[in-house]
Each structure stands twice: as structure tokens, then as C-alpha cells.
Length: 223
Ligand code: IYR
Image (cartoon, rainbow, N blue to C red):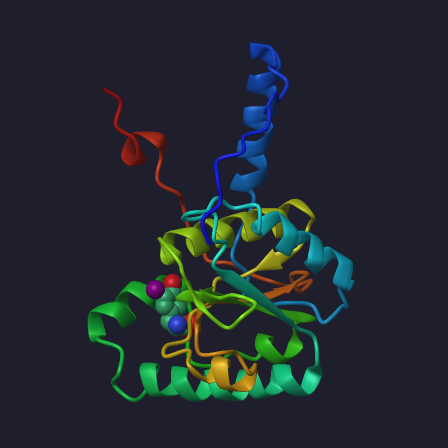
């Protein structure tokens, strides 16, 4: 699969500084208002909104432009219930079965999480991002993928930002191990579950931990 370099012009408009500052501050404020949510309303969310967020996520840069991701969007109530049951089984083993080290449990205490994941059956959508360790072309040949975790991480970030921008909430949920998702969602051998996103509106009485984000000084170095 050797393709030559065939560039096309790229001429995005150059904005004046005042506009850039306005947009930067507005975007920053919008992102700062995002919270991970664990209590969701059961109101339906139309499929086109989920499709739009997946398209936005799929604009992510990726190693050799292989776009090594699949987003599996689940609205079927029976399947969501199966995912809930399987996730809770794994989480129960982690939280109560001694699989999660004490230090980790302590780190999670301020988040108020436990093994119960009722929101997985309640949310209108569960979207599972699968990372493709390698690709498979039309003739069944393996295609090498590069920087798969980095690429999928960036796509996940854009997905979260897109959902937040359209007024939906989500949670980066990573029940461990997540292999049950490959089975329940019939995924091929080249795909590994990467992140599970419940997606919906926050419940009317949703609560979130009172967290603060690190200030600029703590997360940046200027030289
Ligand atoms: N997967 C578990 C535990 C968990 C782990 C981390 I790191 C978190 O930030 C939150 C939860 C769960 O989903 O409960």
C-alpha cells in the first residue's frame, strides 16, 4: 500500500489577535464547565447527535493517518443491560474482591465511586471506543497501525469535547478487564476495547465531586 505524496493547498483564515483571544477564552470557559457525570437522565438522545460526535472525534490526527479506531454506539436496551451486568461483575471483583490495591481505593475515595454502575442501563447511549491494533484491508491482508494508543487517546478527547459542546454529558469509564465488551459487541480480533462512554443528559439531581483543577502554574513550564 504505497501511495505517493499528493499535497493540496491549506489556507485557513488568519484571525486578528482580538478575535483569537475572544475565541480562546470562550473555548477555555466552555471546556472548564465540563464534568464527568455518573448520574444520567433516561431521556432519549437522537442518533444524529452521536453520529456527529463520532465524526468530530474521527478528525483526530493519527499515526500514519491510519485512524485506528472504531466507535460502537449502543442504544439497544437489552444490550446495555448486558453491558451493565458484565461491567458490574468485573467491578465487584475489583472493589470487593481484593483486585484493586488499597492505595488505588484511597485515590478513588474522593470520587465516590463503587462497583455499582446502574447508569449503564439507564443512559440512552453507550459508546465504546475500540482501538485497532492493526487494520485489515479489503483482501483480508493485515495493515500496520502506528501509535494506536496515542491516536485513540486524542480521538477520545475530541469525542468528549464534542459531546460537551453540544450539551451532552459523558464519563470515561474503563472497567478492568474490558474484554467482555469484545464478546458482547462481536468485535473482530484486531480490536481492543479502549474506553467505554455512557452518553446522555445529566440527571436533574446529578451531583459531582467538588474537585479543583490544577492551575496553569502547576501544569506548565515556560522556557
Ligand atoms: N474502573 C473503576 C475504578 C475507577 C478507576 C479510576 I483511575 C477512576 O478515575 C474512577 C474509577 C470504576 O469505574 O469504578
